[in-house]
Image (cartoon, rainbow, N blue to C red; front, side, top):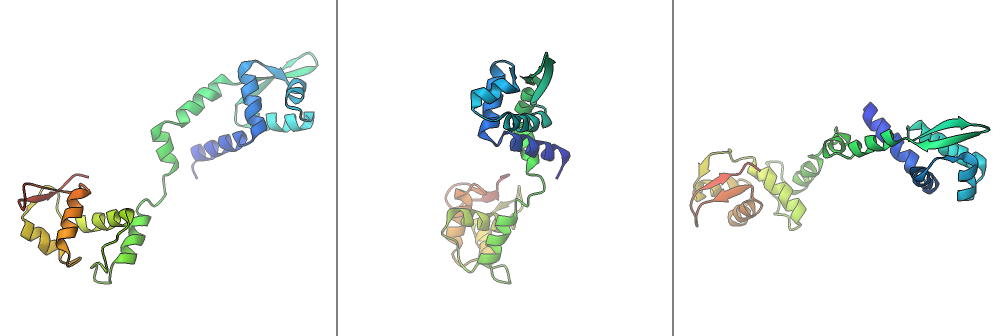
Length: 188
């Protein structure tokens, strides 16, 4: 796991408690001492200290000594950083290393024979889409095929070439020109 992902996990663990969320909410309004927070939340000082320690550990809270008390502040910079964590790019990077084709491989394994032909065409949409992606690999992008050529390729997979052809077009993996005209693989 990358350091960024560890940091993200620690951040969410720190906020995965209702009392810590309340502390963050209170500190977003103004600074409080630990004693004030304990009284507001009806918790023991030691429990508040534990929660503040967890929040400080991820940089959300800091303390400043004022007389006999430590006054806790919400770190606005940490909040700004959390907004950045939720960018699409950063969220996608969290899933790096996950085998996104694993589901397709399982469906293909379940629905194909050793020679690669289909045992059956799946009725369930998600499984059908996985099979269609598998079948579409036999078509070259940019090349145009006659209906006869498409049927020849599809017959290697299943005898119901009309259904496969129609589903490939419906799933936008292939396009066609006119009724029975040329077919071609899309960029999808």
